[in-house]
Image (cartoon, rainbow, N blue to C red; front, side, top):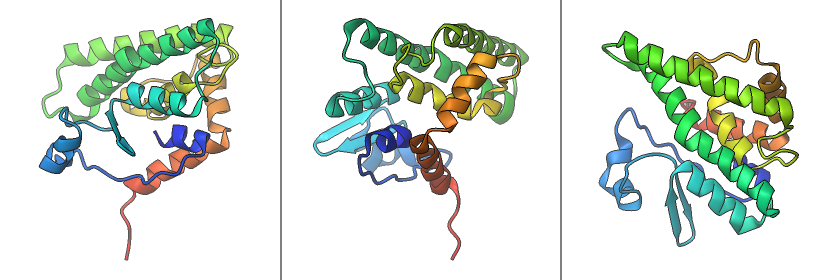
Length: 194
């Protein structure tokens, strides 16, 4: 979410939630998000979980990053849903089974790696016909996908032999707001020294 907040120029206070330590299951956190997952946005009296919902809220709140033309808006939302229902879960499961599982299951690794590669190939084809996920318009669909492609090594996904995806990724990295959002994320994950 830091990338969207940076793109929109909205002030924010980014806070770490150590999911490996189970902080998302604390009583205080669950009071805000009963699903006990990250991310979580507190925007005044609006408290939202789920990346897609947060991105839509921010876009609608500001009138930016989501096309107003009905067809282009539908396309942006379609690709946002591909990310929240496909790319994110597949990449996450692929990385989990390859890198974090204490008892790796070869069939699970193969299944999620195959699905991650299938989705990357689908996106490669789409970006061969479009500059951004919503066509000519940069949108929340691009922001949603960037996070997982930024962590593509975790999922075992490569941009090699995917020139359209590599072009899109380079264009994303070149955006100043993306660089600031990545830096904020990295700073949050880096232990502070005294």
